[in-house]
Picture 1 (cartoon, rainbow, N blue to C red):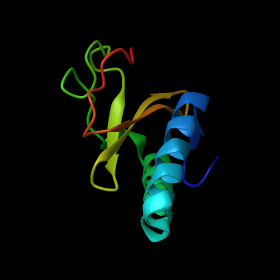
Picture 2 (tube, helix red, strand yellow; picture 1 turned 60 degrees about the vertical axis):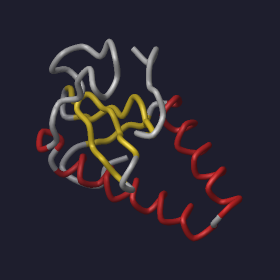
Picture 3 (cartoon, one colour; picture 1 turned 45 degrees about the vertical axis):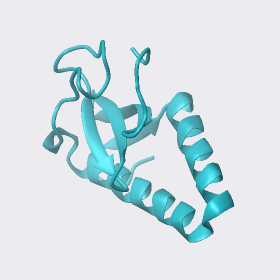
Picture 4 (cartoon, rainbow, N blue to C red; picture 1 turned 90 degrees about the horizontal axis):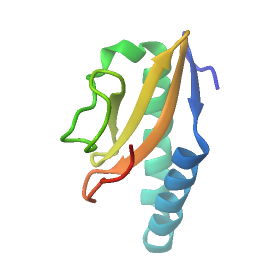
Length: 106
């Protein structure tokens, strides 16, 4: 999807994770679920506008993540989009819930 200067591609793993969180949240509060999706879309647009503005992800985000390779964008107060930027495209590889343990992702 191209919303800004750069394309943003969501991996099937990230898409599935986001869908599961939205589905779970919708069972409790449909407005909160819509807000989560809207916040993700805003974050994705910001990544597309300037993918290098966000800091690198590190071991505190995901144990085993390659150093200074992936970047992170926080959205909806507790979710992070972990992405890599190559050849004018940002690839969102993982969506993580900061409240959960995120071992074994890399």
